[in-house]
Length: 339
Image (cartoon, rainbow, N blue to C red; front, side):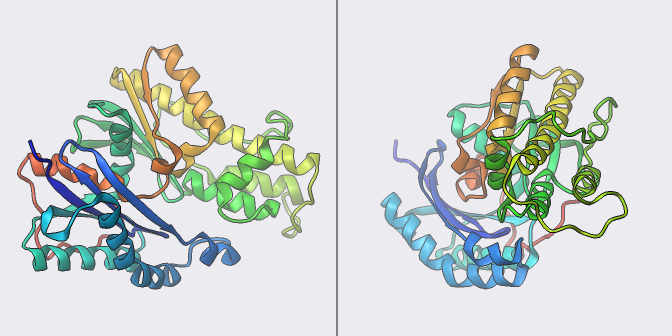
């Protein structure tokens, strides 16, 4: 049988991405243009800069994805786009492009949840159905646990009450003078440090609630540098102190994420855990989750690092909507926040 082709678009934050995939689903092309260099000097993503970069890059990225896949526009059966959550100006670029293509080509439109897409990336990487499962999305903007009943039905079990884990990595990297993005920088620095050198808080670690809080942990790192009433200090230079702080911070985040995943598996009695989002690329977290999953007798799914960070391949979740006859209206809007 001939495959059915779809185009996916991602512009929720600072990655401009397009992908072409089939109804199996198999990803034929996944093209991502990073904006890291544009935002590095600001120490974080600037929404207006991100939106302008998407405007400049999106159409060439779509063309490149189609070229790599060997698929023409008139062969597409649908257009998918992440329309929530994210930076509203960035989302609008992708949503507008997707609606324009859907109208011009007379194709169905599929509006997708970017956060749910990170879990679907695990299904893509596995090459088979992984649902139902516990899902953890851990990224710069989100730290959320889900009961994923099937590929389109997600029930929120808990999430962060303040900073997301990836946001905390970025802020601690800034305190330590490690640059942006913070996650990879902290992980590199932590490799030379002692994860037990500095005692740092682990919020809700011994409570049953499936929520997270990382703002206090970030503040504890600041206090370790300056004291509770001191002015913001200059970043420490290279050496054991900085490496120990990075390692101790990373270990605290990993401990909390691992314990809450264990609690979620026991609560739902599900045999599978799927983890996605940029922080899921962290090697220390992956190792800790692998060990915990073995202890719990659960199957763990974490995609390769290129599918952990923002991309358009995870828009292949549209295939699940297509199979169910679900479509989005042409007045689909960008929705910056989840309900």
